[in-house]
Image 1 (tube, one colour):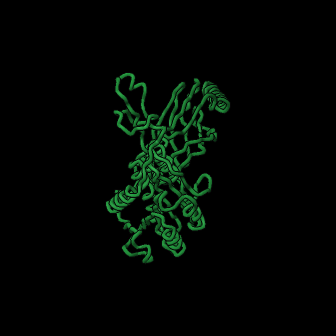
Image 2: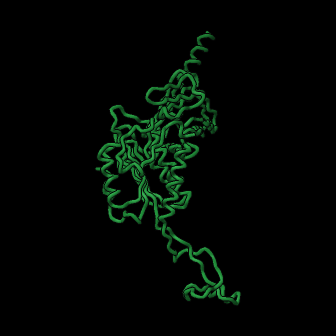
Length: 380
């Protein structure tokens, strides 16, 4: 008789805990994913924070957190429940006590440039005796940028230094009436409007404001991601993007206003990625984000059709900007565009990534403006 009562009591307990968990397991339960940083550079290590907070007295003996993320983010210490196909599917199991906040830091390697998101996650809990699974789907808004690694191959850097010298030789400086860099003694010929009367009264000698200078010269980077080869060479396109990142960082470090335009579509908007000329660290961040979002899953539209007006438009003559084209593609219509730049008297250069010297046939008129960059471990 005792055995019967024990069995009956166990059955009642099993039923009651099952109903209890069915109704209250997800009450005051918070599960979320967030990247520790907004961005990293290709080849760096990132951190994804998995947070579970159980703000109730009911324990969760087994809680599974499942999500999918691009396989270009390579996670360390993946358990047996994780799998990799077109995406990486993570399956973490943990036990959460009452009123417990659990934070797990998942380290991953940023294998490839890109823009990565986690938009959803699944949570599966077990009841006290693990006799039943209780699933729940949650929305997630975790976003992460992997910036292209700037190209740092020595011949590429020497080419940029050479171009920088040419830019500086063409550079015109004008005084900026709204920006001051100090005060100096008055010299005959200085305009009366430049006298700093407060400093003059304080020192007893005439003092003049020194205005800072603003450069008229800017650099435009045009990145051609059109691939005219019979077999798609994504490594060459990625090299072009890395060179654009390296060139933008170089010229911005020189204090030169830099613009960047591509015919590569933005993975978020579908529009060609492009940033108008600006300067400073914030602009480099904008450029990096734009380059990270370039989608190479499909062929880019024709460069000349997409950007000819921007290249040859009004105000882009010989004295306004210096233009740098980065393109592995050497099709006739692209070289026609460069010849049109030459006829217009524009200052420009063509950086041509190649796997072997003399790989692309360059027209004689363009040879002096062309710099072939051999792709061989240029990310070092």
